[in-house]
Length: 97
Image (cartoon, rainbow, N blue to C red; front, side, top):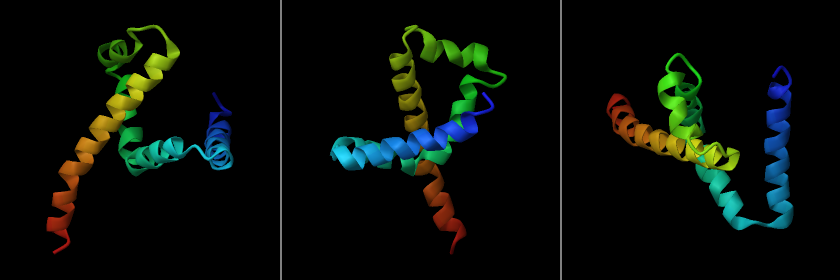
């Protein structure tokens, strides 16, 4: 757990470089789309591991299969992140006038 802070950036760097070498355009598009909402997704993901984890963890762990858990968690966090971004943009525009 202590090395996660070092391993995560290395894995992301490796995936991005591998996608450039292999030229997997759909992977690049997916990573770019996830990157747009990554801050919101990072904030939202805490609902699965914080004080309300008993309520929200069963939503993503119901299949007991890691790949399904990952995809479902990404989909939920991405959807909520996109929704938050959609709601916040008009507020930001109003405050910048």
